Length: 170
Image 1 (spheres, helix red, strand yellow):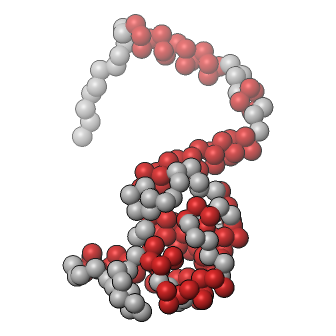
Image 2 (cartoon, one colour):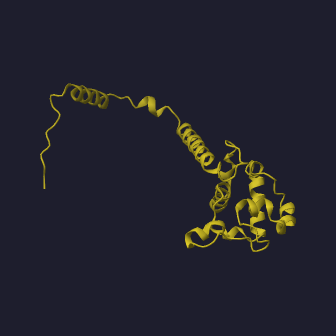
Image 3 (cartoon, rainbow, N blue to C red):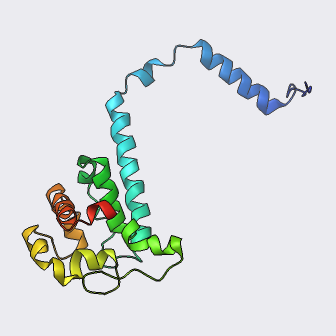
């Protein structure tokens, strides 16, 4: 089926825009754009992605981990493998399969199988006394800001989660 749609001929603003577009297409105006190196665009795009991520994370995490300071995101997370990035992000927002599956199953909130406290990311990382030895061996910092402050700290938390066998459940 074809439908005839009248053009905008005779509308002054559209005709001016058409004329400007035709004039620009005939000129060699692309030289200025080509002089800007691609790395500049990549750097700017990455910077904006990280700013956007930090802003969104700040809004989301504020209610889950009040000790987390807005703006403390470090780009070192980009140096981790994708799976580790997911684990760190889940840790920051306080949601994981382990701690929130009960919501999907419409069951009671999960309890720590080792000490029967409510199961939460905060409990797993900072509070469960059964993991004190592993926590100190893994050099786990005592606040979330320190954990995400460097790649080494994030690798320590990943090693801790693997040794406690929680990594695969996150």
